[in-house]
Length: 129
Image 1 (tube, rainbow, N blue to C red):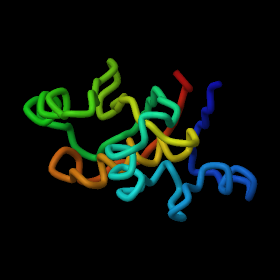
Image 2: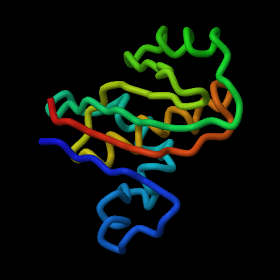
Image 3: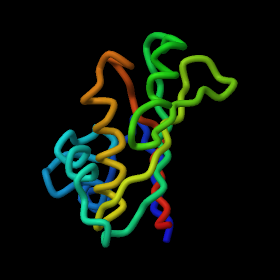
Image 4: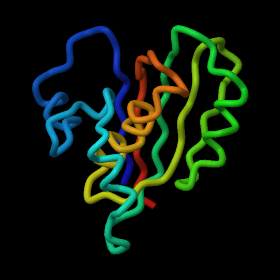
C-alpha cells in the first residue's frame, strides 16, 4: 500500500488535512516529535513503512550534517537531487498508519534542527513494506 501527497502553497481540502494529521494533531508535513520518538520504541509487530520526504531548505545543508544523518541509528538518509536546496529524507519507521510514519520521519528534522533549521516539505510518500 502506498500513501502519497504533493504539498503546495494551495489550501488542502479538509479531507486531505484530516488524512495527513497524526494522532498527536500535527500535520505529517510539519513533523511530529512524539511520532518520531514513538517509532523508535514501536512494537515490532507494527507495519514497517518506507518513507520519502522531499523538502526545500533556505540554506544549503552542510556535507558533515548530511553524513551525520547516515550514521543515525534508524537508517535515515538525506540526499540532494540535482536541484539546489531541494533534499530527500528517506528512512523506515514502524507505525500503525502511514501518516504516523511520515510524521515521525519529518519529526526527525524537527527534533534535530542542527541539520536544517528551516525547511518546507513539498512531497511525502509512505510505502508499506
